[in-house]
Length: 195
Image (tube, rainbow, N blue to C red; front, side, top):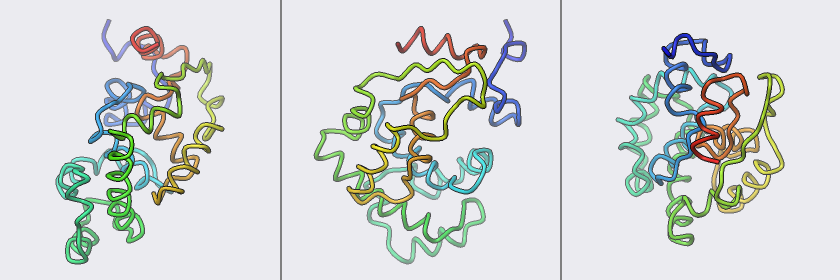
């Protein structure tokens, strides 16, 4: 059956980029540290903006942020940061750009302490995706007790732009939680593959 004929989460129908992201990435469990770091930075950049804005800037983000290599970003200096703030291809918010550098440093510390960021972040869901069963989009929470705990611990470790709502969006994006609505074709696919 063609993907265009399948029932999908309502938010995925807003744009082609969101639909593609929904169909191929959103809710799929991620265990690759580089990609986990990428989503941490992108979710923080999204604060106060729409996800479609970030998706449309994602290619430029990957180029100017050295493909989200935390080892490189952790060494960014003032000159590099000023160059990023002059680039219209990303969100030019000084706090958000600076937070990427701060988060890269904190990320590397967690990576070393936990033998991988994946080991650290997935402990919040006991290493297994949470399978929700929302019938409608308006049932899906913007944050949970788990995202609040994650936020608190990340902040304690020095991370920025990691409030509870951002953490929950991060959990959804990285597949720590399956928040596709039950009538969406991806809900059962992801549940069957990753339960």
